[in-house]
Image (cartoon, rainbow, N blue to C red; front, side):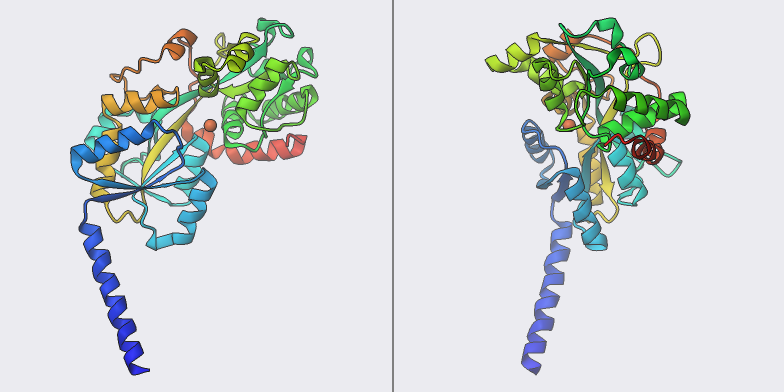
Length: 346
Ligand code: FE
């Protein structure tokens, strides 16, 4: 019995020793909700430049958050990459991040694309942006009847509208921004109008909405710009055929501008390799990494000097963006979900 206990203690001590060696080792534990193959090359370049090896854990946002909660203080996570302001805000409020002061990041990433920057440093840094666009069937819809988010709730579009679930972060962020612009009562009325206009109950992802518009089951839908751009870039004949049937608008160009969202990164609360984590975020803010990072998923870089040569995004053109803070969008998720529950927007 004694021997066993001694062995156990010895084993435990050697584990502590291994852990402390690992902490000094040049590694970085990356928890990423991104799943784009093009990110891979970027990570390899970082290792080449710095000698820091990246251990990558990839899962969807919900699974990553669950893992972080379970690991608690012992989490090996150094950097966390998430998509959508709603999710970044939730993780921030849960205390999964730690504030970071970095001259490089503060100079390169605009203040409106950083989260929780209140003197102690930002909790998260935006790394790419995407827009929520309106996609319409060229035969079934007149373009000027679907020019704004608000117009989708107009009786003229009865039986025509498709979206993914209202509870998805992409929708909650859009509705959160609407609450900020138009107030809660007007947004509730809008949500009611949307439900009245549905062509089918909310289902599927954004790509499914575009498919539904092409098939004619839906006449108009909401989707993130990168799904649309991805299909436009596709060489598959069925995708090309599908995209011939649909058009898109940058919503609200005559009014508040098109809703944009952000994908971003943060240093984990108990990051064992904090310096490497900051270095990695700084690397992702370099011109080269920015162009590559954004381009891989047909998004836009957040750093002004980064040039992403993306022919499809160039073809889609410039647009006026909505000016609502991501903090407001994050906070408004709660009233947004309540509105959806009240009006039966599933
Ligand atoms: Fe997505």
